[in-house]
Length: 203
Image (cartoon, one colour):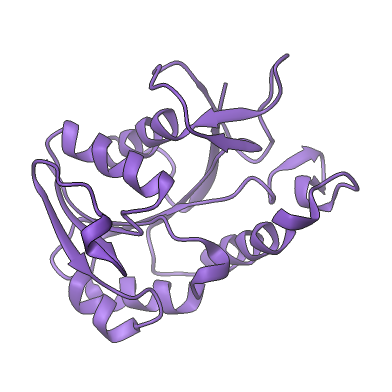
């Protein structure tokens, strides 16, 4: 059992990750701006926290084995999050990444393709900046898990593929459900295989 802090625990990805952690018996401090929106689950303690409050966040994160960030990139500041994690002394930092920085061909990112939806571009570009910031950290044990292009509600099947920096797709496109993404992320907490790396999950 790990003691995990989850920032953004009431969001769509965060809620799925929270349930997966709880179902596997991990002890979770679930953090959100509106803690009343956090699901009441076994081994879960809801706490009010602000992703922009470095000192307050660092205090909430102290004493945890791992911290997961599941907040939108455009609704947070990567430097604030990284410094809060570092100040807390948590051993590991896992980030719910984006698909935009994944490659569709060598040296060609998904977000840079002409048909990439304009509405999602600011979030995707911020995700790429977050990944670059993590790669520059010398003393942080981080992992950035990028979903597939379509990160959507769906079933928990337990059947998916893992990759590195290339977008995964099949004959139905590029997608992963929130529950299956959560499996891959919690697996990484239980059996670390991508320290200081980005990886991806998809069908």
